[in-house]
Amino acid sequence: MEQSNCILCHKPGWPWFQKADKFPPHELFRVVKCPQCGLAWVNPRPAADEIGRYYPSTYSWKPEGDGPPSRIHQLEKAYRFHLLRFETRQLIAHAQLDKGDLVLDVGCSSGDRLLVMRDAGLVPSGVETSPAADYARDRLGFDVRRGTLEEAHFPEARFRAVTLYNVMEHVHDPRRLLAEVRRILAPGGRLVVQVPNVASLQARIFQGRWAAVDVPRDLYYYTPRLLGRLLDAEEFEAMAVVYHTSLLHPPTAAISAVPWADPQRFWQAESSGSALEGLARRLVWAGLTVAAMAPVWLESRTGYSAIPTTFARKK
Image (cartoon, rainbow, N blue to C red; front, side, top):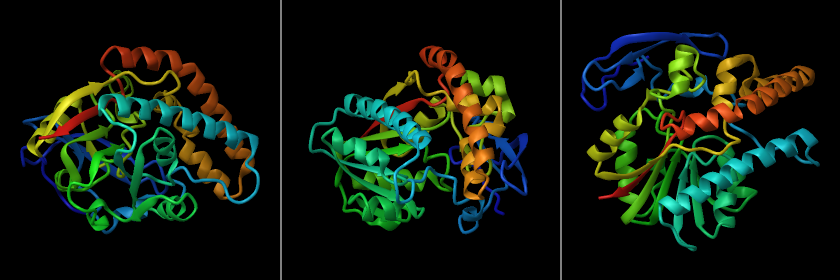
């Protein structure tokens, strides 16, 4: 474990709350908050060379194996692609992209978002640290490099836009990541950052049990204001913060209400051979998701969205 200070003010944090890892052995972690700016982070935290053991093999969505997909997996895929198309439409509009623009998706997993970007006329590449990168590269044919963004060694000023969807909260050194993004962005290029908002209504209602506080995999906890301050420090100008989400995007609230129905847990149950338990968890999750749709959509329209997206421009 390592100690860390605020990446904005360089001050040690004050204790805020403690939370156990949702995966066995349910290790307890402390979240602290900067007394000056309010940024929150896990401290002490697993070092970069040990964080991997906190990510189970089922942490990210994985494509099905060979053979026809089951009906339930077809429905899940349709739901996932609906959300990705919604976000890609936002990306094109707010980042002012044209057909043929080169876009890099950092943390691209197995390539679903890359497929949607390509269908929209963009030319996407990806970076991914997990084995899902191999699927996106070898099975889908994308330029996806396995490892960190720094290890990918993309040419300078290559991309018109770089997307960080639910990535910034996971990295040990966000400022180093942003510096590399700035290097590979073309002049005036766009940066897109989506992170959980600890000032959201959901965060205030659920507090420590909010599903977006996923210790120790989520290392930092931002608000739109603090994210804007960090972007400014790294030579980016925030252009817009988009709070509204798709009507079909309430999973954080659903999982916060009933953590037992977390998709990562039913993937884990299925991978261990417990198909019936996995199905039960899926059905509960689906019911909660439907029930939460309208409240979460209304939340996103108030400016207190749980997962806003910030669009910035390279200065």
